[in-house]
Image (cartoon, rainbow, N blue to C red; front, side, top):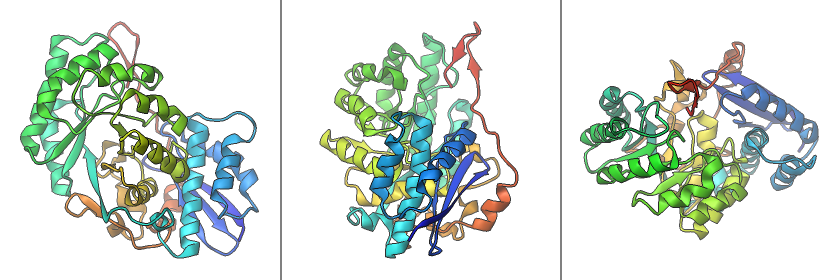
Length: 381
């Protein structure tokens, strides 16, 4: 069996999909897009396709090594995302070839279902209660929200009160038996994060995410030492090597993104490394159904798995939902806040190719917002 054809599709809301076809007719799908840089990710996939065409798709580890190390230069979100999507598609092919789900090829199930959480915003605290109620109605038992909107370099009393207001509103809707995670989104300074975390403790968040920027990961240990809230990070770390300092610093939750951190091949190694540090996984995934299916295959087969992000109802989707490119939406349906273990071979979901090709006729140009402080200096979004 040989790789015969590789295609990419830019589709709404902000996704890049890759389709890899073999000379036997088996097709695998992946999500290699880096949000806001999908066109560049597409070029990287096309570059890697020069090597892949004509090769055996089942030699996944060999291909991963070649794609990540050929040309001497390595790493970074563009390369890692391109490799990630291709890697997902190759695992999808391998599972279909073997007629078994990918998690079965990774050693079999460690659990029967994975707990999910949904996004509820939080930039505007007045909208939180309604947003949380909608996600509870959709079937979630846990949600994630922003700790703040635009944040001053040095948080004021009013800024910190806003953090309390948001969490208080969330807890009133959720009650004591459901969970809320809080995302700092890198908006706070080190000192600001510590201050905010200390006032958040009474609300018992599931975790506090990205309290420092990835370039300041060498200081995340200072945050860990100042709070009882489990600290999470990792959506902007792209390899086990980049995760190592954060693990050594004492984070409690690792959040690799299956579409940005080298795919299934690398994230299962990140999971094994995290297990050494008694750290659980909660992969970042505000993306599409293929990325989510890849995450879940790791979740089904990995012991130290806490919870999984799901983009159902997320504001990025804007009229298009997570299920719209699936042949059977029930593949990713929630049941009691969880998704049940897949039975279909490969990644476990069937992509509606006609819908993808139609959507790709209208190219998207999604870009991240640009924020600025009152003095005109750049503000982290």
